Amino acid sequence: MKTTDELFALAETTKGFMPSDEGRALYQFALEAKGLTWLELGAWCGKSALYLGAAAQERGAALFSLDHHHGSEENQRGWIYFDEELVDPFDGRLNTLPTWQQTIARAELEQTVIGLVGAAEVIAPHFVQPLDLFFFDGGHGHEVAWRDYRTWTPKLRVGGIFLIHDVFPDPADGGRPPFEIYEHALNSDLFREVGAQGSLRALVRINAPGLG
Ligand code: SAH
Ligand code: MG
Image (cartoon, rainbow, N blue to C red; front, side, top):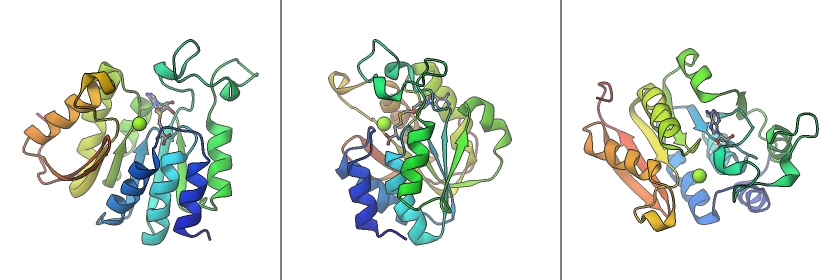
């Protein structure tokens, strides 16, 4: 079993979009989760799964790491976050699944981090287990992000932790949807903010009803 420091070190060398200060905060927030069923939407190469997985291992939780592994719009050829090394010669598409598997294997987290390979919208109606932690880091386009928010956050139990990534109050720093969703969640009476680090926000679910 790898230590937390070893997992953090491994995360540093893993491709992805999770700065180390935010990753460490992710770990700290996750340790506060009240129950043991956790899910991240947006796995990529497993970087955030190492920070969350370190906490999950310590707590005896299961982290479902969901992704179709073909990247978001901004990861495709011609966009700034494109990475040629991740193109699968089989069909010319991005495929982060082999790298994700290697990351989780190297981290010795295969009993803790479980891959859910598929589109979030396809999996959502079948995933009925209430969540104790939900890390929201999938597609950042307006429609996709709002759809995921509306379909996945109702699965969070009262007391469950809702972690949102890429929340940028200043539009110059990044796209709007995560910020708008964060504001919406806070303005509803369903969530309360419990912490922040960089573009990461930690909320806790305080009420049961739907999302309005
Ligand atoms: N958490 C990662 C970064 C995630 S990037 C890290 O720490 O590096 C966003 C991911 O969301 C991409 O891997 C993309 O494939 C995935 N994604 C986008 N839309 C999706 C959808 N509809 N269903 C499943 N995954 C999706
Ligand atoms: Mg992100």
